[in-house]
Length: 270
Image 1 (cartoon, rainbow, N blue to C red):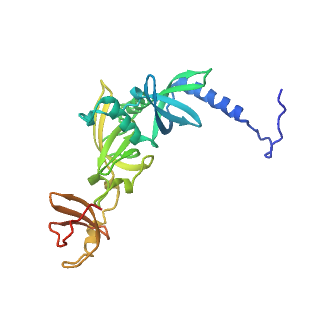
Image 2: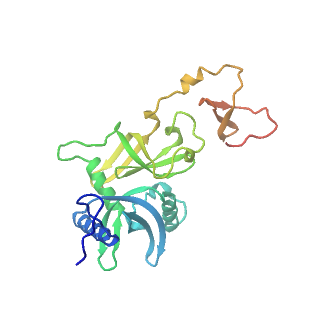
Image 3: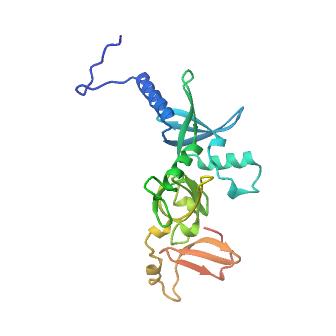
């Protein structure tokens, strides 16, 4: 029998690495039996003989989630290459984000865990987007929610809102024109947003939402516009060029459009 060590704190308990691992495994067994939703960071994507898997760590324990259980929304990306390539591309963009999952298999001998993000998202959708025992729905149009940033591209931020995903375009991210959303938002961030529409299907449990992030921000663009004077010269940054029209965010935050360029050099984005 191991002798109890004397701890610095009175009546404290010293845990070895083996003790912590045993306690964590006991917690995972309870979570597996109760189908409790856990959360962790998506840390990698691996290729196995049976296909691609997402790797998530929960308190140091490695979890494997098959791609089929990741609930990747491919309906918005029809025509962008074959299925497997698209799935891996989406997963690569999501690395670093926080996701929910439910344990679906435990191996006591190998201490390996298989989990499902799909089941966790389904459980959250059922709880937040459909009628509860009180006869009310928690998330409806106009509700302010905290969302997870699960992917960021130049002109779009992808959010996960309690089991439902949506893409927020640059025009709904901020009042100022956004040249590159990746400068302001990063995978793994938590942000506040307003749900602007909800479509739910009780039979399939599918939920489609849209969200707006700029509604919760103060619109200072019109106030700053008063500082600009006609014939005044101001510096700015080009956020986009479309059909010869140059979109500029001035240094004071004002949005400006230039229909012509008096410089012999052709301006470039940024």
